[in-house]
Image (cartoon, rainbow, N blue to C red; front, side, top):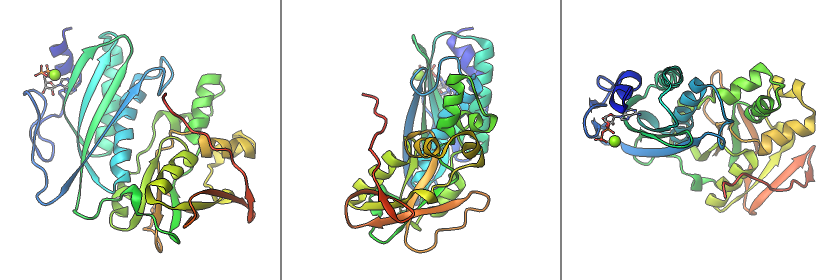
Length: 307
Ligand code: ADP
Ligand code: MG
């Protein structure tokens, strides 16, 4: 199977015919019709075998993940995702692997209502998948990291720490199905993100753990935060599987949650089936302050950095 056959077989599925797609896969570049008057939002994220997921991960999960993590960034801007392009560097052209990868990828595309409109395919010594996502948002409605103001509430969607706990299960061989699933199939909060447009004062998606991402959000806004540790939303699966200290550790430092962390003045929009939890408030004083039953507690900062 050569490169062109590979693209045709596994990726050139739905190129044309998607909303706003004049020409998808098959020409030198994709030709798109943006919605008149809308601003464009672009995100790109790569996932690398051995860095973002353990070697030998399920190919469908990898395909799903590389789309979902980008949709999550688009959601954190309050935008509607429209189109994606995909660059894959493959260690070989294994038909079963490609079949599975593309199935996961198109599952995510269908779920988040985006069209794959192009990409690039190369070989490399390690598997790397990169997706570029384009979204749209009305002018002035995008949610930036810099908009938090003292007195705003701090909120988070869903539950925290599950994916990291699941990943731990994956590596140590004692998986909880539910937690494993949260790692394998991260749910981007696309619907809720767009509902936050024009309402949230600032937002970020939680990819590196609450503590690190909250710190980024507050620094970008020139503010600080006071967080009630008891308010952190923790899933029943996490609570039954680990003691309280480990639960909080996963929630604060675990990463891979892809929940939305945002600030809002007044009541945030209803999340429907997605829980939305107030965990604290923005303060004038910079830095993060953590509280347990009203008493300040010290939490050592630590995050993930590639270098
Ligand atoms: P070029 O040499 O002009 O870059 P390619 O052979 O790389 O052309 O790509 C041919 C077409 O297939 C282009 O439309 C490109 O966007 C698309 N394509 C290539 N790889 C992928 C992929 N992994 N997923 C989706 N589309 C792809
Ligand atoms: Mg190319």
